[in-house]
Image 1 (tube, one colour):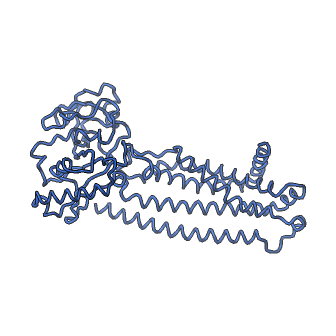
Image 2: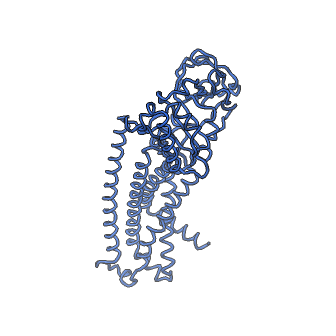
Length: 451
């Protein structure tokens, strides 16, 4: 331990004596590690982190497949939803929502508030509890039932100042009196980020039998041992039976059903660009590491006489390698810390990469997984890209080095040439990857524009 502390102190003194080299090395690493940490934070938040629902891997979205009419993922009709709910064999439960809006008056200026009508089992199916109050009762999800509403955390704060007595308060929606029964948590979001109010779906009998209006969103929870593929097969068979019973309203069997995992639905087309971007910044890190290795090797060459003197005075080659490796690890650690700071600073911009369907419930921050990722990158960088120059520099010819005769080609020179070739190859691959990423983003932009 004492020897290690001496190596660290010696390395710090050596780096302080060469501030230009130290600054360039740390900045080079910080940019590479920071970019990887930042993009990994986005990938972790969007693709890896569990959704904020109970057993989210069992949640799916069910669409109507009207590809024959140009709508491969169409909103279901109410009558189809009720048939699905009563006849399927794959789901524990199914819930429905519909988009709407209200004119909210009182307690401030009148405003138009985006809302969702939801079936009473919607929140229990997701496994979400309100921050205040309760969710809807089954009897409230009936036509003519009590007019009750749930507020979003944002609406509660901005409109009612976070008042604790908002529950059971009457509010005016479209000129009618509604009673607030609860407030949802700050991070709750389902599909639409603009929704700030929830009311019961409460369809009448005529609307429950409607197969012509397609406006519901349907979420379901798979039974424990049922896969998405099995649920898809079940729904396809069910749609075939429904087409037999209602041929005119089911477009003579052309109307199908699509079952998607909730994660796939929320992430959408963002998965591929994010993964491509992660690979691209990985190449940036490799180039930064290659630059660091070149800097360390050039510095070691300039210190060959110093290293030769230390070996001549009795220092083992292992001790020399350990000393040089300690310097590279210090540089990598400093670069990792600065890179984490740069990643944190960039979160405000990178938040835009998160799909709108997750933008409210997903916030970028340096959690334990992200910090561990940055630490492992820093450690790997210091060991892998500092070890080769250290081993190469420790192989000194004492007589030649002490005489300062180094005019002929050396293995060190060949190693530096190899690193240059390596950097050029990585740069070409990075440029190709960047081109593919731009092309992917361009296609996605065109798709969203068409929608």
